[in-house]
Image 1 (cartoon, rainbow, N blue to C red):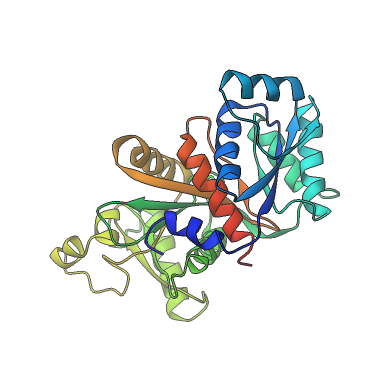
Image 2: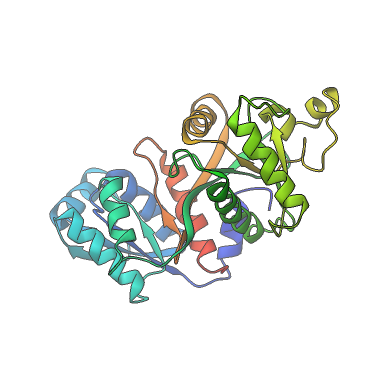
Length: 300
């Protein structure tokens, strides 16, 4: 796929997905849900303060849409109920509503009642930029603060699964650093070189990994050629792996605020895709994220 809108086209031939949303009394979430229901993509189970949900829908002039509302004002109990709907296979996606991320994740990671975790939870962002002929997959800008090499390999695996689901047969993965050369004073470049060698030795499967690469020579053939970089990934990267959360978060938000991009994102690594968007994310980004999660839930 080369555009996020292609996901919607694929979903048109698949079953409608049920999504559980704890603390659903949130205007942006309800607007995105209404749009996704109108597009015939999902059936939402809204868990939260019923009076607030109905009040927001009235204030935002949201036309009534097909959904189930479970009245639960306690956010922690709402998260527990949403997670139980998934474990009971009554819902196939989770989406965070107006509840703190820590409380949301505690419910997901609860050892007795939470979701099954396969490896590591990580955030995968799909980016469509009008000046490029491909989608980019950026990770991890929201979950893992300072991952080590073992965790970075798991982050790669999650991102590659998303890329493959969106029909990128052999994703090219760039391990980002400040420069394309290894510096013993820069841990990100050392980690990148180690993981690139692991890829060479087939310890990481289903993709091609190289690094360290700076952002410019990871995505631009002109930059890669100008610097004389010989690499199967340089200038052609599909997946961009950031060294740690600070740089990743800056990159993500600079794309949102300083560039003309379309974005959708999910948390991967659990038994179902999880939509965990920021309050500052647009309604379009929330819609795209729901759409992406709905598609991934059927591509396991």
